[in-house]
Figure (cartoon, one colour):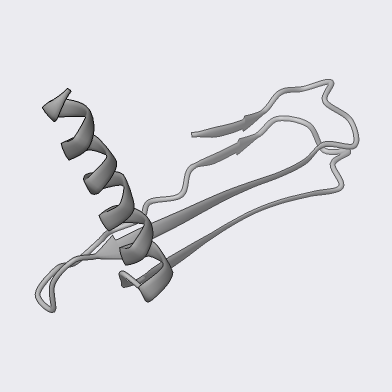
Length: 74
């Protein structure tokens, strides 16, 4: 939930979901919730992105897994 309280004049807020789909059958439901109580705001918005794990993300995950395995061996 993104809340912009009354009195937060000039606020600029955003809510963004990044969902990683780990299989072809995987699904993700993003439900943005914005509560804006101030009328004098620069902007408030929301968005979502769904997709498979890309090469950079996979490299990062594999690197982290390797580090964790080495730490457990110590």
